[in-house]
Image (tube, rainbow, N blue to C red; front, side):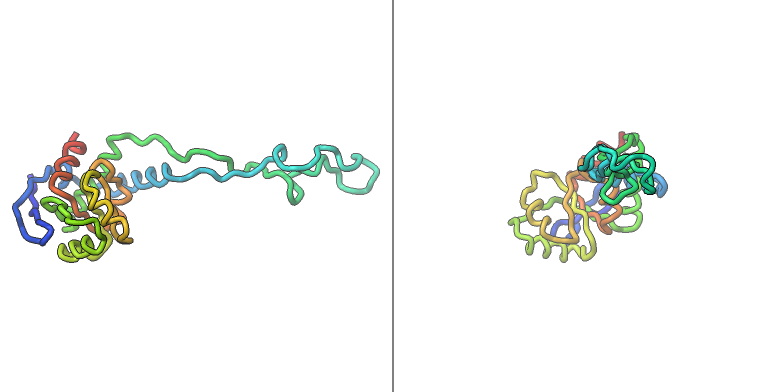
Length: 208
């Protein structure tokens, strides 16, 4: 079983925590992570693009002139797709881009991403995010003390209101709850700072 150092917000060592090998030392499956990211992005698409068919655009359905004898090309009505302002053929309609993705594959991708963070030294475990205020400046100072200068994903419980408020105004920082961590954020943000309690919650879910 792997172990890692636990720090307080002053970047002082306070102890160690055991990490399950099945969660933080699992084989890194890059293809599985790629599949999970594709599914995450597809599920997040709005799917609201819409065009009008010839039955939906404005205009009369009356035949504009008789079929023969005018010397002009035959035409049915003004809504024909061949004319400007006419209907669109095979255009997009509102749809869902989501598709089924097995829960075990999604959890496997999360284990791979967490293992990669631990292997690359991008995982920091803190004793607790006990912030004295909700001010963004104070939290930015905490991140500087912890040597977190790159894009950072912060994971702790939603009940930590000071952390939620203090982190939301930092453009390179994102807050997530243990059950709200997703594969896209784990790969997008360089560093992962997670509280000791959040580690336990993640392990309880992903070890299944």
